[in-house]
Image (cartoon, rainbow, N blue to C red):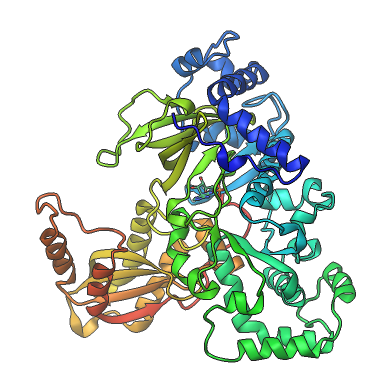
Amino acid sequence: MVVDSSALSLPANEKFAKALQFIEEMTKNADKVQEKVLAEILAQNANTEYLQRFKLDGATDGYTFKSRVPIVTYEDLQPEIQRIANGDRSPIFCSHPISEFLTSSGTSAGERKLMPTIRQEMDRRQLLYSLLMPVMNLYVPDLDKGKGLYFLFVKAETKTPGGLLARPVLTSYYKSDHFKTRPYDPYNVYTSPDEAILCPDSFQSMYTQMLCGLLMREDVLRVGAVFASGLLRAIKFLQQNWRHLAHDISTGSLNPRVTDLSIKERMAKILKPNPNLAEFIVNECEGENWERIIPRIWPNTKYLDVIVTGAMAQYIPLLDFYSGGLPQACTMYASSECYFGLNLKPMTKPSEVSYTIMPNMGYFEFIPHDPANPVYPNRETVDLADVEVGREYELVVTTYSGLCRYRVGDILRVTEFHNSAPQFKFVRRKNVLLSIDADKTDESELQKAVENASVLLKDFNTTVVEYTSFADTSTIPGHYVIYWELLVKDPVNAPSDDVLAKCCFVMEESMNSVYRQCRVADNSVGPLEIRVVKNGTFEEVMDYAISRGASINQYKAPRCVSFTPIVELLDARVVSAYFSPAAPYWTPERRV
Ligand code: AMP
């Protein structure tokens, strides 16, 4: 066990000192805290239908729990979750009333997973948030001398048949009193007014947040969004809207596309004519060169606050380009199921980021994961304090809201220990083939989409012989590219351009609701593209893989590619390309 508490020993003030001390206490006693958390959860939920089923008979220890309660996936719990959604208020998973559902960006049968949550969990999440600035302050001082320009958004919410709200965890947080009536904290002053963050119209919200960021540009000390893709979307928005924004700043009048009354009222107090600032913005934005645009417009920015680990790593080069290499701080690791932990060294470069799971947030177990043999061989789980440096594990969580031994789907690698608490590199999410923003598309979803689109080719005696995919993030927003090798049996009656464009659309319609929401409501994913490649291309891809050591017998065409030489090979063989001509269907309502 490596003991390293030096980084946390320089408190800036009493509140921060207390927070750092709390982190030390939790991480020094990871195993004891975990035991206590499990005992609390099991005692709290002892009389629930779910735990009663496994006859714990009042036991609250790890051994009994693990030997009697099974490890589960979302699909295992779905019947009970559906009952709660339909209005069953009996204590099914949790003895506390379910306050709402958090909708995960992970999907099941094409719809967001519904995670039941309780009111008390908000306090636990708040606690983790309260630890972020004390840690950051150790590395970046004086953040109380200015503001944060954060692009934060609420998303659509729905009600389940039984009347419970279903919405993403951050939407739930921004709409809560915890956020709306937060006491003034000089370390957490945002340029964005709450009215803009809470506006459900993404254009009006983004426009106002960008406008305020520009108006207060000298005050901005950090620029952020939840994920890297969100920050890049904001830059793109500035590229598309700087003339309107500069006009508003020059004249002191708000763009008529912003119609939200609470925003208009708030902006009437903030927006005053400032022709000099408008001229500055025009000068910076009208040229072709957008390199270093972030420090050019916000010269006092000390770092970017965005998650660039996991699927978001693909955006690091572009963020470097726009920020002139400003540090990219990944501060926390969280999910709808449970907020897990934080990065105790937030200034480390993205490839070296590790998150420390806070033992007070839930009860954590780890399924050893062998990258060479990813099927779970029914082995015992390992406790938080017992994982080994260098090994990979799949995270399993038991929460106060009533999830028991739930497989989150994340693969983590232990990098080192902080006191007795392990630190984890986020390796990847299981079964995700393609991801641009919050969307996560797995192999079977892609297969189904290709099958559905292929139906259109039947009339033309054409089949898809082989396909693969690529998340193209060279433009913002990024989009899915599907490479198709076709067998056209009757070249005189080959599918037309229109038919192939329609195939793109059918594929999009087949995707899960998070993908379609990104396309329709958030504009965070661009139209899907099919690139038809020359016959024989996939054989070349195979030859290439074999020349690099793949076994001929076991070779299967990859369903997603990211390795540049393969993408280049495919692109060099493209004979025609098609884009989806329309956005797919999406509403916040779930399909039943
Ligand atoms: P959701 O349930 O939609 O809130 O998504 C939670 C998932 O997002 C986690 O299980 C991870 O797969 C991913 N995620 C959250 N935080 C991070 C992070 N800091 N780095 C990489 N992936 C993350």
